[in-house]
Amino acid sequence: MTPHPSLRQLILAAALLLFFVSGAPADEFDSAGVTIRYDVRGEGEPVLLIHGLNASARLNWELPGITARLAKNYRVIALDNRGHGGSGRPVGEEEYGVKMAEDAVRLLDHLGVEKAHVVGYSMGGM
Image 1 (cartoon, rainbow, N blue to C red):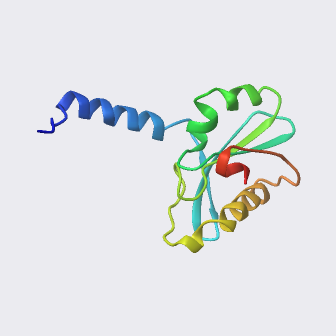
Image 2: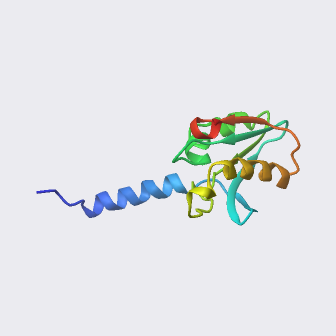
């Protein structure tokens, strides 16, 4: 017999989910019909952070403290890739791949950034 989760376990799971999904206030922009969530902190040379598969900017960069450390010396731009975090989730394989890289370029254009250091983790580094 499989035990059913208790109400306490369900509440704890919901609280953890909210913790990982919510985060610092962020902005959004439209990238060819897909809403892309992003956050900008700090001043200096721009650094674009691109997270890995099944993660978000919050999970990959904010929670471990990387965003805060970099923001002391750089203008840190961290986005949630399409299909991840707070960004839109278009349907269909053709809506991913190269279009994710195009989102990053459009974000930099949207922010008026001509050149940036780019840091990617896992899928974000491909």
